[in-house]
Amino acid sequence: MAIAQPADQKTVFRRVEYDVAGLLEFIDMGDIGLPDIQRPFVWSAAKVRDLFDSMYRGFPVGYLLLWENANVDRTRAIGTDRKQHRVPGRLIVDGQQRLTSLYAVFRGKAIVDANYRETKIGIAFRPRDGTFDVTDAAIRRDPEYIADISEMWASGKSSHSLINRFIGDLRAHRQIDEDEEELISHSLDRLFDLRRYPFTALEIAATVPEEQVADIFVRINSEGVKLNQADFILTLMSVFWDEGRADLEHFCRASRVLSPGPASPFNHFFQPDPDQLLRSSVAVGFRRARLEHVYSILRGKDLESGHYSPESRDQQFLVLRAAQSRVLDVGLWHEFWKVVLAAGFRDGSMISSQTNLVYAYAMYLIGRHDFGVPQVGLRQLMARWFFMIALTGRYSGSSETIMESDLNRLRGVSGADAFTSAVDRQVQDTLTDDFWSIGLPNELTTTGARSPYLLAYHAALNLLGARILFSKLRVSELFDPALKSTRAALERHHLYPKAFLRDQGIESTVEVNQVANLAFVEWPDNADISDRDPTEYWPAMCNRYLTTQGATSAELDAMVRWHALPSDWTAMEYLDFLNARRRLMARVVREGFESLLASQPQELG
Image (cartoon, rainbow, N blue to C red):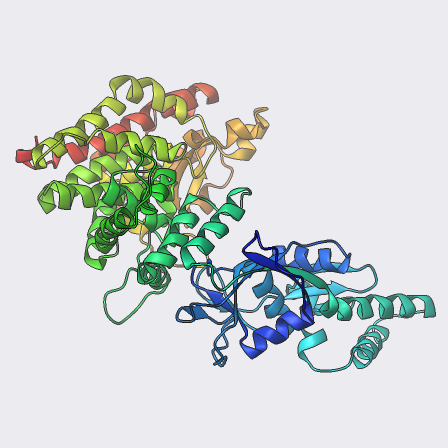
């Protein structure tokens, strides 16, 4: 049921009271639809669980903002059922996540998740204590739970029959006294009656233009933490360039699925979200990284005078359109991944920061289109740039500020040679002798398996063609993303095994699991080494490498160098070994990076 309050002449909205059942009925009839200015994703199952828990306890869960529909051309139905043919009379502007979640659970409907897959939200309920949970395999086997509360409303059965069936099933597993039966019945009645839960909606008048509705949406959300600046720009795109936002979403959806047909954006490195590709487009088109400024520009604001103009807005959207056409070019997209491969990074497991990819892609496109750097030279140049930003985690913190600074360095630069010099100069200024000899060894004092410094060491092993410890196989071969097994082809072996160190009185995780104590081996060799003393297993494994696998002494020496092992390391004190190996690992990383300089085309020197 909906009860409208008189509209205030000074406002552009009126207040309307609904209950859940009424809202769902309007959605079923197609009278409430989703406008394209809203984000397409639903909450996580855990957040939906919390929503139902709050409703069950009688807590307020927020209001809805609806818009009386004057623009009927671009709307989409809630959920994945496309049988709603009626033109919506009201559109959800704010609260879509909440209402879509309610609809999915009360009606038992599938929704589209953040990865663009159809899925059903499973929320479980335990009547004896009123607990809500996300449904899992254990809950489905537990007779104390209703495994999927959608059954309470979507089955069409009466609450009486559902309660009797639940109690009967529970009695088959354990005894229930009258008091507990009363408690369970009361809890389930209360759950069933959530369809009467009240919602307040603020309905914006149909006479309010779409741009102003988008502005209301942004103003409401800018007070909280639900949206970021990218979301605001995506909102503007939905108003002024809807097909551009649709193209972003389609590209991102396609990047998640390996397609046997025509070329697609799928790759083994990165399955982007629209806001991430938007950042690349903004950097390419406007040479900016601070999205707050770009939002104002796209609204037609002159940043100096503060004035807005529709003509300026339209012009700026043309700039964004041109930039996005490059960002979403599948051919350019895959050429960029050749850059990442050339830098020694084989798949997504070696990438510590997706923001590095976003901004490196933008820099690649700028170099190619704005400065005309030849493709072969550009690939090697950007491989050096990507190795540097991946090694240092350049865009892992204050990313907008740092990228803005990097883009500013290109102001006044013209021509391929000048661009190449500007990029290489920044690389050299970052990777100084002090960085290699002092900074990097210190940064390798970590246990983090996702440390950018460790991942760069792995990339260097790939660049140098390094072989796995005690193996003829190269490290790069077992980083192949196409290789999938129940057990990892590569394992990280403790050079000083945990049990051995424990016997020496060294048990601190910070010391035992330092990356300087780890090396790649194939898993059968790791099992053979187990917890043996290094002075025992090292000569035995080296001898086997020389005899059984037919390796030469030169190959053994190369293996020792690649894996940064100090001479006579098995006789060293453990902490001395860690210090010495960190320095040698840093040397290997530098050697890997310098291999990118060695392959630099002559004209770029």
